[in-house]
Image (cartoon, rainbow, N blue to C red; front, side):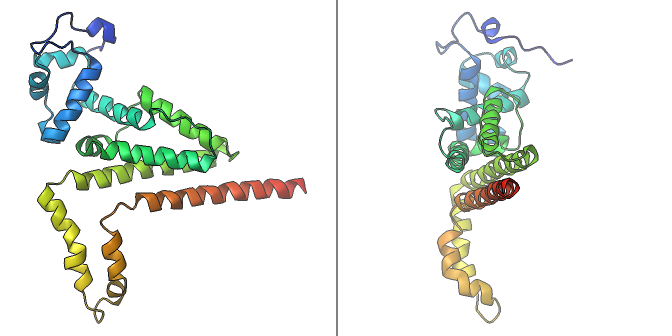
Length: 242
């Protein structure tokens, strides 16, 4: 049976650690984020976390059921950072664009954490609040509920998928990332038109674009599709009123 996790106040250490800090759930999450940045995903262990906190490693289990539970808390923290300070209220398309960009930016600020958590569903407070807000923006368009859910799923999955993809590149060793980026110029741009006419014709454009994230363009494509759905729905409504 899984160990019950008790509320924060009941878990709080009554004495500071050797480093003079009081361990809290937030401190553990922030320390884990730093460790992921410094040591990568393989470096996030209970033992190392205890050392970083200046506390016994078992302290983690007063706050989390284990590393996987901590991973979900990290995922929720990234969403919280993305959504912090944002309130809907503009045109729906601008609201969704802002949310998408915020999610992408927040995850890329912590590449190792992004790769670790982008595929997870935490079911925690920040994630739930973000989902509620996004669904509210989409429902404000007047779209039928099935369309709201369809676009919501595509929007969220797209943002997280690109965050994971772009973060994975940033998480590579510098030499590997530089080598990957050079392939477009060193290989693709040199392919002859006789054997690869399409690549050769588009080589300058490929070299200029392919090392940048495609997320901004993909986001606009998704928003175009959502807007087309809204227009079709409103067009049908106008036809019914005629």
